[in-house]
Amino acid sequence: MRNSYRFPALLLPFILFLSACAPAPTSPTQQTPQPVTIRLAVIPVIDTLPMFVAEAEGLYTNYGIKVEFIPVASAPERDQLLAAGQADGTLNEALSVMFFNKEKVQMQVVRYGHMASATAGHFFILTSAQSGIDEAVALKGVEIGISEGTIIQYVTDRLLEKQGFSAEEIKSISIPKIPDRMALLGSGELKAAVMPDPLAALAAQQGAKIVLDDTQYPLYGASTISFRKDFIDTNPAALRAFLTAIEEAVTLINNQPQKYSTLLAEKQLVPPPLLASYTIPPFPTMGVPSEAEWRDIQRWAKAKGLLETNLPYAESVTDQYLPTLIMQ
Image 1: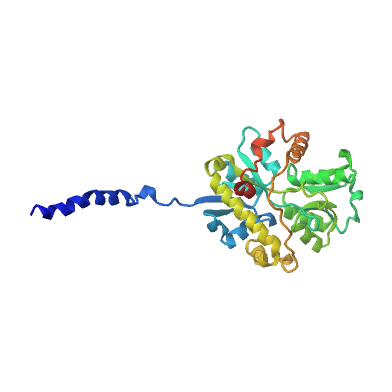
Image 2: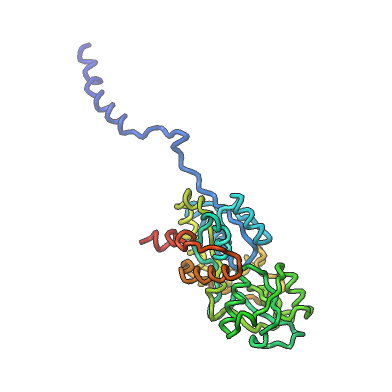
C-alpha cells in the first residue's frame, strides 16, 4: 500500500507545472476589442468617392475599423454635427477648419481630399450663354455668383488675381445655394458663376461656357479630410487604419476609374444627365496642405474679415497619421 501512493506524489510537481503553463480562461474583459466605429459626415460630392470605394472593397474591415456614413445636405449641417460631436470626421477644406479653430483647436486636417489635376479641373468660372462673355479677361467688374466666405470665394479671387485682376476689378454676388446659382446662370439673370466639378459640367451641358478653371493652380481649391481633435487623440490607431484604407482606395480609383462608375449613381455624386459621359478624375495621393498654403488662405480670410488672429499651422494640420509614416 505504501508504494501505491508514491507514483502520484512524484507526478504532483509536474502536474502543477503544466497547470501553470496552461492558458487562463478567457474572461469577458479579455475578449477581442470591438473595432472602432468612425462616423463620417458626408456631402454628396465627387471628393468623397475614395471613402465609398474603401467601403465597397471591404478595406475598412481589412484594416479593423468600421465606418458609418452620415449623409448631410450642406456644409452648415455638416459642421453642426461635428460641433455637437455627432460625427468624427468629414470632407471639408482648410478654411472650414480655421473657422472651427478660432477659439480653440477642435479640428485637424489629416489628408488632402481632392484637387484639380493637369487634365481635370475641380472649380470652374462659367459665363451664361446670354452674357456674350467668352474669356476671363472680360469678367472685370462683372458680378460673379459665389458662396461668400467659402473656399469658392477664395478660389475665385486667387484665380482672377492670377489673370491680372486687381481687388477692385473682382466683383461677386453671394448666391449660397448651387441650384439657385445654376438656375440664374442658365436664365441669363447671372452673367457668371463659380461651380465645382461635376456641376460645372452640367451647367456647360446646359449652355454655359467655361472661361477659367483651376487646373494650373490645383492647391487653391483642394478639399481636405479632417477629424475632431478629441477623436484623433482617443483613436490614433483607428485614424491610421482609416487613412491607410483611403490610400489604397485612391490607388484603386487611379488605376481603374471606370470600375467605380456605378458608385457615382449609387451615392449620388454625379447628376444623372452626366452619368453616361462623366470621367472619374484622378485623386491626389497622400499629403496635407503645406504651411505656405495654410498661411495664404489665412491671409485671405483675415483680409475678408472672416478671421481676426493667426492660427498656428502645426495645431490644425498634421501628417503623422499618413500611411508612409506608419510603415517606415
